Amino acid sequence: MKPVYVCSRCDAEISRTAEECPHCGYNPTSIAWRFGAGALIFGAALALVSPPVGLFGVFVGIIAIGGSYLLSPAE
Ligand SMILES: [Zn+2]
Image (cartoon, rainbow, N blue to C red; front, side, top):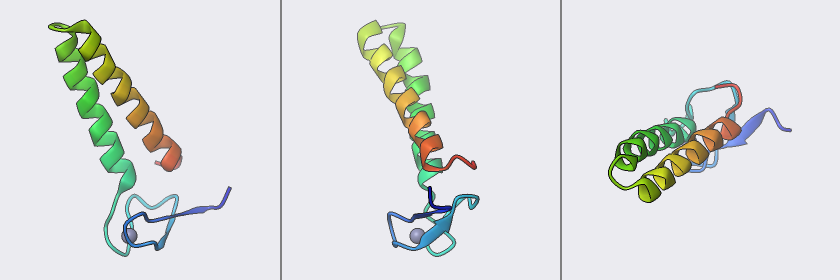
């Protein structure tokens, strides 16, 4: 696997150890992680009212957080 990945906003190569793109400041890991954490918390709260919808939110959150680690294992 290459030690760098390409910024999806400006196409610059970013080190896997970098927390955000040094060229434009874009941080795909952080965005995916925050989205996942938000979906996880929202889903957990919603599960108390509507379990099928809430559990789906928790599921989406886990996938998003897992995906953010795949994008940047060094995080
Ligand atoms: Zn960039």
